Image 1 (cartoon, rainbow, N blue to C red):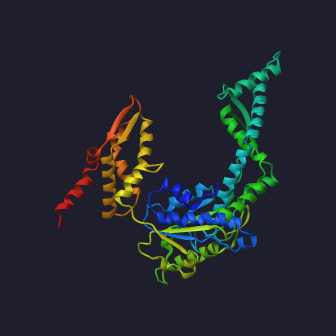
Image 2: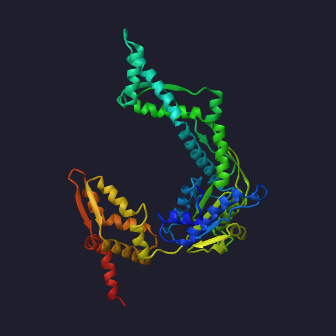
Image 3: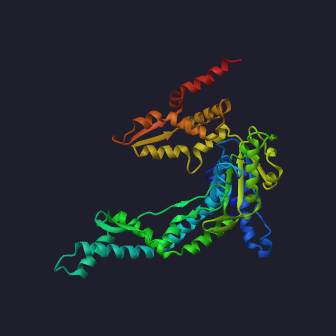
Amino acid sequence: MEWSPKEIVSELDKYIIGQDKAKRAVAIALRNRYRRSQVPKEIRDEITPKNIIMQGPTGVGKTEIARRLAKLVNAPFIKVEATKFTEVGYVGRDCESMIRDLVDISVRLVKEEKIAQVKARAKEIVDSRLVDILVAKKRTEGVDVEQLRQSIKQDLADGKLENETVEIGVSDGGAKAIGIMPGMGADIDLSQMIGSIFPQQRKKKSLPVSKAREIMMSEEADKLIDNDSVNAEAIRRAEQEGIVFIDEIDKIASKGSTKGPDVSREGVQRDILPLVEGCTVTTKYGTIKTDYILFIAAGAFHVSKVEDLIPEFQGRFPIRVELLSLTEKDFYRILTEPKNALTLQYEELLKVDNIRLQFTEDALHQIASIAEKENETSENIGARRLHTILETVLEDISFNANGRHPMLDVKIDKEYVDQALKETTKKYDLKKYML
């Protein structure tokens, strides 16, 4: 399904409250990808994504907007923090590693899709192998082998043998992919190099049928898919559909200084710049062009400004959107409207221990009001403030619930919230008397 910008915003509204400008910007960027795929090839190669800078305090939805956008279209997505990278010559992660990580994620996505396609065939093979193993284990002299096989096959299909122990050959791990020194190029997959020289070691292991089936399914599915086509499709998808979210971009703004650590910060910007402009990066799956990857940068920009980034970097992020601080009304909507609302999460969690929570309207409004005041008077941590408040409100219930009692109905009203947060509410009551 190809989403229209309005449909994309509508889907994002199910999980993220407010921030309409940011939602519109990413919705247009995503739709432009589809539009680009439909134009003639000679023009398509000339059209590059219009990268986005999101400016706003922590906890207002910057990362969540990008993550939900990628999930909507099943696009390869990676979130990185600009502060984790250093320019070439310093000890730390080189900037190209974000693209290699994106390709790793793309490979995993494509592989999961291919495995899902061959799952039925793999299950047939695994079930046949399990029947052979169980027949060999249960076979005794004078028993009709074919009748025994049919009986085991039926029991296996009915799930009666899930705890039966079988002995299977399991691969003995092997070398993992390792990276070279930062800035020196792609990762080397030692398991492939060593595997081509020495055969992989296998050892016998006794496992329940349920566990053995998982291992055998993974092995058989790997045999049925073509890794070369997986890698080629993963590279293509990362190139054409990949989204890289660079957080904390304000922390590498140089603020006009040319001494001290600011030199390194500007160096990181210059190292990220070729990736955003479009270059070729070598990975263990092949080379990837970064020209058509969508980059979304985000930062609070409390101390520095977007204008403090180097001009070339700013030029590669033509779209700028500002995300607003959350108000009491926003907090109330966050508690009640999203599909994954915090109140719903706590209700489901405590239902496990036979506690049926019910939040009253006045309680939700009080929590929203306290969240807004706390963010105004102390550090503004956005919607994450609700985690802190709800954990405090529900601390006694969460601690005492053990699931050994019948289902209990617990009402959380304004009085309960005020009692749980009496120190906090007292602080705001006193402010009425301060000049």
